[in-house]
Image 1 (cartoon, rainbow, N blue to C red):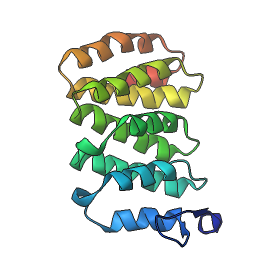
Image 2 (cartoon, one colour):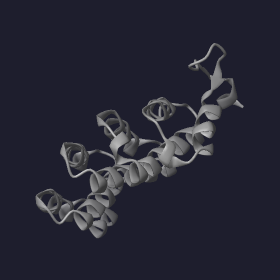
Image 3 (cartoon, rainbow, N blue to C red):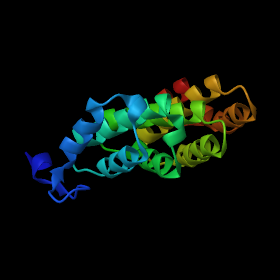
Length: 170
């Protein structure tokens, strides 16, 4: 299996596969997650194996809901990139992760999620625009503040999208 052949240096002296590292993080309670776990999961988001990427995004989503204090700009940037992933499940989890960050972090990090998502409204891929629409909808529903209003105002352009599914989601 390709995933088992990819070696990632561990914090110790022997190499450990990324799959094993992600599974080790999954085995412990989410409330015990650390900054090192988040860094490891960010590396796992770049793995060639979609299952590893999905697991990393899933764990980051769980951490964003349980320990939003561990979320940072690198997580937002990684999740925004994975809205374009070839794997549907990875894209889906990226939306969930970004929604959790925007919901749980009413600070500049939540704003960074919205700004990054708004840029993707003009993406060439209809699949990316659909997922961004889902993300912005979740943010607008959960953020009755200025940020939520900004999302609604900027997302009105989606009502004129070429794709029926994007318009419907908007």
